[in-house]
Image 1 (cartoon, rainbow, N blue to C red):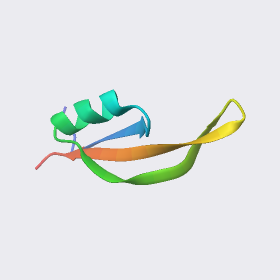
Image 2: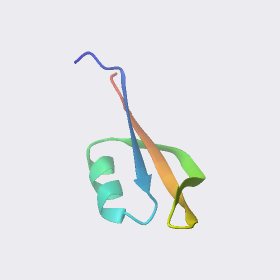
Image 3: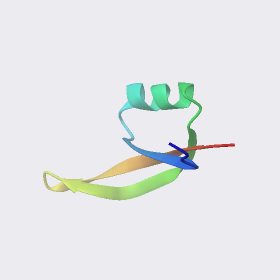
Image 4: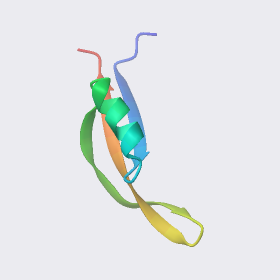
Length: 53
């Protein structure tokens, strides 16, 4: 597809998804605090990326 960058947002408590993305060589770029609001509360998410090198 010719993409240079692919991003993933992962709920911090979703350890299975985080583990899979890291196995696929995604790198953590940072923590997005209170990034998503649902059900009356805010949730943190990890931002990960994979670059075409």
